[in-house]
Length: 148
Image (cartoon, rainbow, N blue to C red):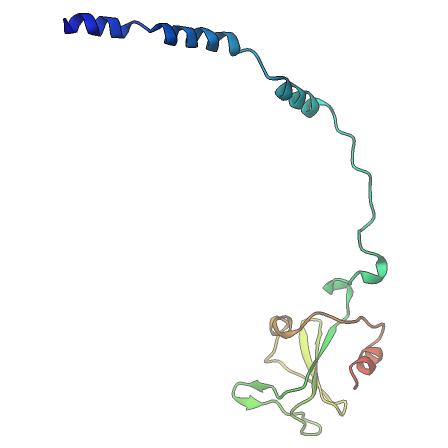
């Protein structure tokens, strides 16, 4: 008796046969939307029109290689290696301008004395500098802008 049940189970049912026939009929058919998308992808696209940079020239910021240097004010004292940095010319220890130029850091006091600071580097400058608020044609214009 179980032998006959197993033999009947091995033969595909009517529903399985209909499903297989429908699958064979539909394998080569493609929906209309898919055919349209494939046809559109095979057609050559026309190139996008060339557009100038999206920013007007007065809003463009020069890159770091187009600048001779960058300057930022530093009103508080600077402590390096456990000692306060003091101006060699006048003894001032605050209200600095920190100048980054050609991978060197210079410090300028309010009296106009400048000294090269070897313990600072451009990485330190980039970490502490905020965004530039202006660009200047000369160093003197920059000093006037910063009040020195």
